[in-house]
Image 1 (cartoon, chains in turn orange, purple):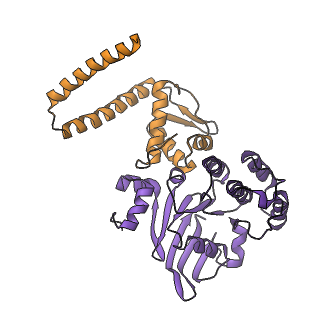
Image 2: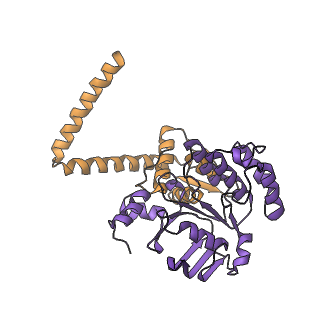
Image 3: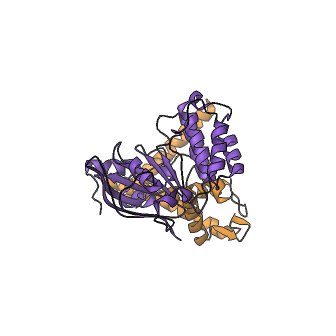
Length: 129
Length: 236
């Protein structure tokens, strides 16, 4: 995996695992690879993986079972909450960047609608080609 | 024991020139530490002082033991295989290590040799730079030490060898051991570093956790390191 050196690595590991959960690559109840294996797979430090997993356990997204390893929570509610949180984070970034371009709230909504409509057409064209 | 290394007021002079001036440095167990600095900043000197190969004033304690002669038993460091002639076979060097170091673990060595794809029947003189560096890594990590020192393991080697070496560090560094990796080019190893120590102006100019640098300054390790040379980041 390629990391952005400007962003804390533990944070990027968390985002990577969240993403795996959202796409279904990691399902509720799935066991995560061992810490050292994850570190080797992602080419990062074992301590950094441990920090990322530790925070996800505190958040209730992962459950640690003594001697067995770490598992994705079976609590669907938690996963839904996580998805909501990830969406809000993306929106926050998007909103702040457009605000920085001096767009009003209405202009942001209009631009987004316009974009989605255009994007839909483009994707349709791409499919028909 | 939480500190694997404690350096106090260490000064080293060579030919009346001060290389390291009154430095303090403490490293905790279980970390991977990047030792960064320009060529000639004193990184190799510091490593040689830690192993006991060079002598300065001040104290250096490894695992709480400040007797320099004892350091070699706690510290695993392979100084570029300089002591061996170019006609020496790799398996002979491994035999020598097995004899000299009681903590040399033959099983770990075999695993490392297989992982790094080293042909041990080759002679030292026949090895490419990348292959030689892999041999150094295999010999260094085959020992069960508390402190591992790697002096510029990535300089001038191909990217495949580099990736293999980085993976073997993550796989084989014991959880309770600390590893110091010196380099003057950091971006390729930045993701595996717990913390960085920057040697500049004859002193430890900065010592910080890598993720703290990213969090505090919003910049990468390479950019932070360069900024210290340009005087860009205001640090305490």
